[in-house]
Structures are given as C-alpha cells and as structure tokens.
Length: 229
View (cartoon, rainbow, N blue to C red):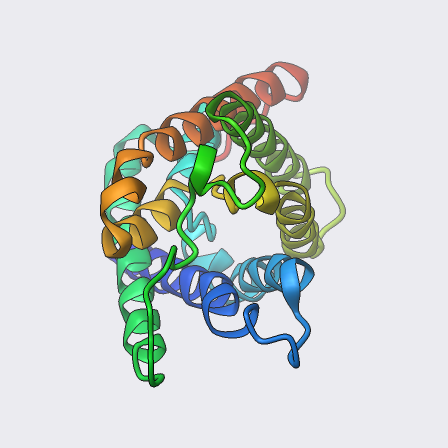
C-alpha cells in the first residue's frame, strides 16, 4: 500500500506540475516559458519524485513504464494492475486540482486543457500515423533510458537526472506532434475533463506508449539481462 500511495502522489505531481505549466503559465507571453518551459516542467516533476519516492515505489508514475519494466524483467507481474490503477487515479487527482485552480480565473475557458491529440487536435496538425509513430518511438527511448540508467552497473545516484532530462528532451521533440503523452495516466487525466474528441483519441495514447515500452523492455533485456526483485 505504501508503494501505491507513493505512485498516486508522484503521478499527481507529474500531471499538476507538467500539465499545470502548460495550462497556467505557457499561455502568458510575459512569463516566457513556452514549449521549452513545459518540457522542462515535465522533466523536473520526474527528477524531484525520483529522489522523493524512488526508494519507496521505484517512481514509475506511468502505466507504460510499469509495463516496460515488467517486459524487461525488472517488475513483478502481480503488481502491474495495482500500480496502473494508482497512477491513473493520481493523474486524475492532479488534473482535478489543476481544474480547480485554472477555473478560478475570470473568463476561464477549458480549451484543450493540455490534452493529447492528433490531426486537428495536434498542436502542429500532425496526422494520426505521425502521432502513433512518435509516441511509440518516444516511449521506446524513454524506457530504454530508464532501464539503462537504473541498471546495477550504471553510475549510482544519477538515474533520476538521466530520466528527467530524457523526458524533457522527449517533450521538446513531440509537443508539436501530440502535446506529448508517453504516459497513458497523464493522457487519461486530461481527457476526462475535456471529454468529446479527447476521449475519442485517447486509445492512441494508451496503445502507442504501451507498445513502445514493451518493445524497449524486450530489447534491453536481450542486450543486458538483469532480474531485479
């Protein structure tokens, strides 16, 4: 239960910090954070939580990460469903807090609420196929970095930084394509508030990250096998 509470809080922070930067700050030119600021915010949420709860739950914060670690032989299958439920609920809680804060502004309009999308709902108008390929590849690389930086022979103490910087880079690449998911819990939390098109396109942001993560787990396991209880 301690692990699940940690995953809940960590995913809440990821959504509140990352999506919050997009909803509350990115639209104000005088703050000047733009895409770069949003990308950095997502990376910082992971870095901060890696050191806060990494020793408790492993700091997955993402159903795709849990699945990728399982595919790579690093995570027990019996913990998958509880972790995923905790992550999704944490994401929804983070989005709920963000909604309460954002709606306190006069003239508030929900808009896309940092939801993920493709086609006309892609920030750059990218097609469904482009979004699918982007999400699979970005999640593959994300899990590859996670598996490598947490390997027992990797330099100690730096995994959180490597993973956070990788997520930042992923956002710098893919925000224009899909608003960047690589995380089904993050996508679900925002889609539930937006509804309509966001829920209709949510399937891609479950399928693509899971496929990319599972492939990364299998590839890394073949390259550098290690079983961690």
